[in-house]
Length: 130
Ligand SMILES: [Zn+2]
Image 1 (cartoon, protein in one colour):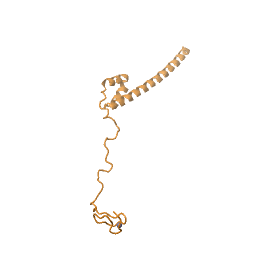
Image 2 (cartoon, helix red, strand yellow):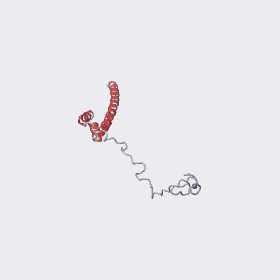
Image 3 (spheres, protein in one colour):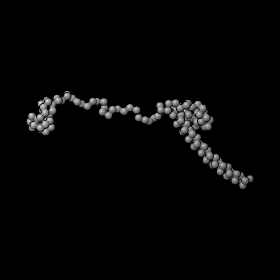
């Protein structure tokens, strides 16, 4: 019966390889589902790691449990990990420009630069009109 068992063993090995490949494919699909559950749970304010473990341990049953138990998505704006604060600091730093003591309202001649008397219309030095 040796000749009869060899083909059978070969066939079983081939079948085992196919089952192994099928198992890997299923495992990858479950891994993707578990990753989706992790991200979905985190976006709902639930423990993503906990549900990741549940799905990995219980498979499709864990997925069903998660779909039943999971909370409704509330306040999606609260869970955004990124985003700038709505307000921005003023570009001047909040400090007024240093004005110092107010300079005397003395006018100077545009032509020669000499100081003018208040209310003068002509420069007393060069005679140019102010
Ligand atoms: Zn002048």
